[in-house]
Image (tube, rainbow, N blue to C red):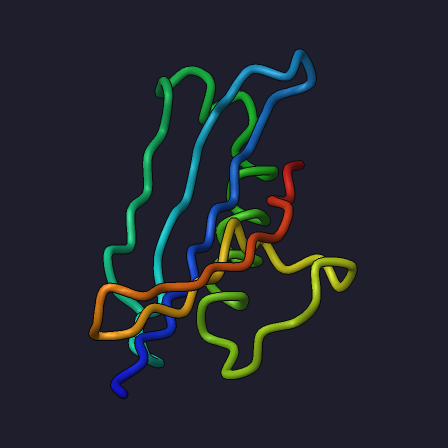
Length: 100
């Protein structure tokens, strides 16, 4: 049986008013990081929160480069992890996303 292991990462960045400033996402499929996306809500929001965004992006890069997946209480921004078989059977486990 062929199993795929997919881990989804997300690191949202909010300003002090809890408005989304930036969001970083990626997925790891059988050890390969792919579909890396960086989105910024507005240039003005980014400029006003530049230090916070840069720090979050550094943390995001560290998380997606790590070889081992940490448990949710170790502050890794994993949205969900699933294992799927090449047949129609599949299982999934979800963990809580972190937000700043």
